[in-house]
Image (cartoon, rainbow, N blue to C red):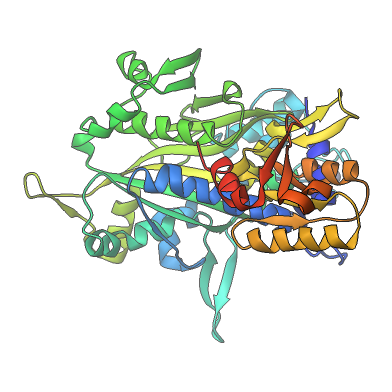
Length: 489
Ligand SMILES: [Zn+2]
């Protein structure tokens, strides 16, 4: 199985991602940059998300500010509740995140919602001490994870948003009206969120600044089973996990067996499954895990995490929360704006409920890399990143077989013809074998080689990354070939 370290090495050496401010010693942890190859892959992942979720479901998308007023987070509950428990050593002042530290020491899970009192008794009963100096701990305290900032010369209090969805709630009324919305309506946003994690770690997996793709589905709570479009996905197969495993069970059977609460939730979990099915993640190693009351976020009534098995354990990629009217109610009362909408069928007013699909983009990209990474021991131990062509950071490479001037010129001409329509590279240095390896490692699905015969009949060879098979194609057909082969299927 591919290891975390193999992906890290690939990411650093081939321009997927690397630490922020790395040339300075005071670079803070938990901030990473996407390099050129990573940016391309991220853009393609987002294009797939737009295609398979936003456009497919006729959702609408907004792009809001990353800095939001204090009132927003008063209404949302983040000022009060968005905090992590801390353990601080009385002796050396080392700081640890309490639930994780206790869990490591006692060898069992400590759910996120565990109270400070309960954690204090766990520390006492298990004689838990500081791992750095064996000192005693102070009582567990809470640390708010939002980044506070000051606006203008008077430094008015504001915050970097800890989740993108608050913009969607705050903008809901205007967006719903101007776009003549009807319930249920999905409003989506992609953007950065910021959390002052106590212990950021594992590169893209726990960041302080990260990309979210959030979808908030506004719905009428009395009509959660009126979903004609559910029929599109009734036979889509899901893996559910509560106390038991329910593998490979259709969305319809999930409802019949009472594993999912209503058609709206079943429909969106199925949609999400179909989306991830196209990313190259091995769907046999995925599950929707139903969260227990202890684990759920403070605003959530029913919650499923979409998790994927990786070399470092099960990783949460999407949090699916039924947030009910928690958000709109809070913003209504704090802002004194009525956020109800008219239900057209009977002209009554309703304060919509919200079902949320909150996706971590960075984690999704890491998982795709890990699941698509292969070492091909039959062929020189070559490393092949078997990305679906539509997610490949680079679609093709153009390689002159020899460095003869006439062949190089022809290669450059062919590359110029195609490079505006695709992400591509041109590479004339090193043996042809080495050049293939470089392309395979970053997942380039097609290598176009210009050889002696090209000069005679204007054909090239296209070499497939996974099978290493070659095909002869006339240069006039290359564009259509690449479009067809890199289309989403
Ligand atoms: Zn200590």
